[in-house]
Image (cartoon, rainbow, N blue to C red; front, top):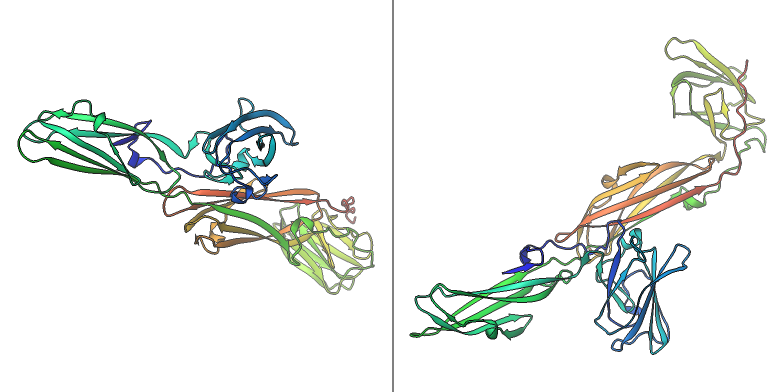
Length: 472
């Protein structure tokens, strides 16, 4: 038999998620000192920098770690000891709370600086740290209460099920190709009929290796009369390999391929070159809906439809310098108001005409720019996996975009995308933050996730002027 410290049967221990956190903050991180240079790093690409050839893979090194604040100023010393290869290093928080945003470590040998490490250790940064990740001479072995190595206890029970007493003469345990003799651990080697002896063995089990551990116990006993008897038993512990790793990245471009955060707002003045040939408005109300009729100075209809809040109204072809519009109640047909739009003078984007029409574009000057967000999901693990969730949050609203993912079954090393189109208003000062979270499920083991965010900062070139007064 075998149990962990909480009494759970070893064969039933839940698989461990290698991802350090699920967005929550952690209060400590544990590393194994493995020595070696930055080339072996699997953590953030810029986490490590070597000096003077980097640390030795065999010699002792002094490890000095400090916490940094948001301005990368030292807050506190977290660890300062000379360690040997194989030693564990636990980095605590600088107080009673979580780890700081960044932890910086310096490794030196005989007073000579060999390596500098910077590791993001705040909640959002630890989303990208996995157990067994390597940064230079340090390998991640634990995050908070999550650890790769846990103590377990094997229990070897010997019971005489024969018809007479017998002496135990052999008790061998074989594991990982190594056989050990446990005979001396049997307190009383003579077993009467029905008696049993229990031999415990404490060991450590690696939850992160993904390697099956088979323990074989062999016993021989010699009765007073007759031949020796033998018994063999084996115990298997298998933890699925924790190779689920995923990366998601947001990109955004307009129809011309410009990055959405680099789109230049248009000039607000529509009449720099005189009269315009096309204008487009958004019906913003009041009322919620209206019958709208707009005509040129020859009396030709330019628009005659019922419109609702949020809908577009486009006037094109045969525009005259003055366009007259009338608005009618959709319930009783009564005229609500009429007003003129001067297409040759004082036409400015975002101005409101007739109290209900907000100007969005004039000729090539457009406030509402079509953009496309692309969410690229990359399987950076070593096993195939299924995408189970893709949550996008913007303006306080969260939407699951799973049905937009081109292929939810993602082989190791492959990527896929999901896309969505929007209209970006570049004429209003705003910060538009989009965040996305992807969760994937491997065939075995624990799901993993990743998050990304994209910020569009818009600084409009002008502010709307006061709305023109409606015509009397």
